[in-house]
Image (tube, rainbow, N blue to C red; front, side, top):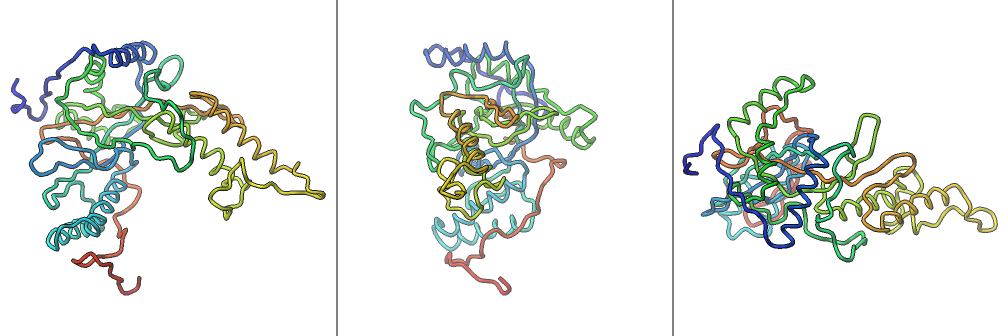
Length: 365
């Protein structure tokens, strides 16, 4: 079949390549083992980001990670991206005017696609899911990337989720990737717990966007609850980044939330460094000292190695391997569906700019 003839309801062919290079072969063998351990799929729901198609290119590139919980968050991210481009990178007044016109639309409309200064932007939708089996939700695999020397510093910066990602549905895939794509082509909401408009949109997507593209795996911290597993932080680009986010919650965020460290404490104060209440004679044996020691001890346990499960105060936290499926049609990646819910309305995020890139102060601001 000629790929140029692919239309609605028709799936494009896949090119399958068997890995022979040692590292790739090990990753593929790991994936085969994972299929045996986690044959079921747990679907969490949609995530959103922004992809761009630059002038003269046929491929789409992710410019804002597909990690947002609703379409409006992705639109707001695009709003900021275009505003800063207008402020700092516009080549001339004409380009700045075009960028600011797009920003104005995003401030007042739910716009999912824009052509701006030679670039086509689209809010894209992916389904987040995870493998599951008798042992629960899949944890990181042995061959998933891990740093040789883990950096636990709070300000450490590494590659972001989807950074530099090119969306190419025609790229060769391994046998396990091909199996996963084929198995998930028909993924659709069918249960009665989903509203009818959600189910109808899901059925329609099977025809309008019949192909699926698997995005790189991400890693999420979840906690075990009476009803199952609930995300705590994530998605993250690596299991180590997920562990680091859990350590930050244990040492910095949760002690403040529960009143063990004052909200106005300096940014470097955490469960390991905050000076406890001192009683008569300078004693540090108070309730706060014991509480913070428990947080610090749990955080230290994460640094003992590649720890993927931690129990703290009766709650089990786990690092799980999350995956994302992006549907693809004749015109590229799927955008938001009519039934997707927004948690907020469009609004102005930044100060207005004039055509020279200077900020304007409006009456009443």
